[in-house]
Image (cartoon, rainbow, N blue to C red; front, side, top):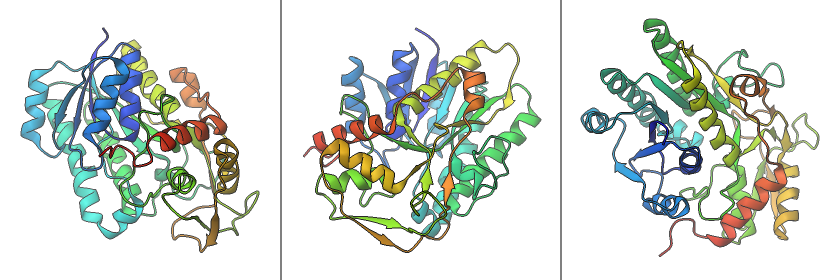
Length: 343
């Protein structure tokens, strides 16, 4: 067994897939999640898939005393930090909630880590920190700016990590900047299970395909792109999970601290909304009715990554195709039309 890892937000979409990848790579995991946007059933499904119970602690990252109890009871090599609110629209309506949870919560977590001398930290960041990119593909040296409180909260944490690395050179701080995670575990047992109406494109398409929603709204068809719809870098969630394993493996190999080391996780390829709809329709055999509506404020035309740094440093690259992403999403959605709500 390799080192023990604390996975905050491990019951969420990316967290669950990463827990499986960590287990397969030989890491011991402890999941810490307040279940505000996730389900206990997801933990049960992970346990079934890996064939053993997972140590799960229901707790909030803003609860310093509870975190201390967790760190006192375990000897962690590091933390993978997924725990955060992530709906852009909700962040605009409730900015204080987002700053309190995503920024203040991360500060509390880092303070407790420092108390117990745990200095390896992999952070769930986002390509939203790049704002409207000046140059494509986007690499890690691109300028950063944000158009909404969700993105600002991710960028604020990145600035905190940069300052922390300067103040104490023993820290290893890797923000992984995800592009657009989609897909599901090939078993169909775990996947994206949004509360209410999905905020992200792929679960919206899949819920239309399964008959839960009547049609897809496509925000804008007049962008300067291949077909007028927005272009994004979609990455399969299981590829993304392997990126976290690669980051931990990288930290285990280091003899000197790495400080603040941001790394993009993406495919390096852009796919338009209409291209994704067409691919999903082909895979599922379902017609996806859609309508064009006005652009959303803050949306950008194109966003895709340069993932060269991940390949060079971590030995990681995305392997799965848009077809794979659509097949696995459809498998999950058709097997679980109501997500984890099995009653």
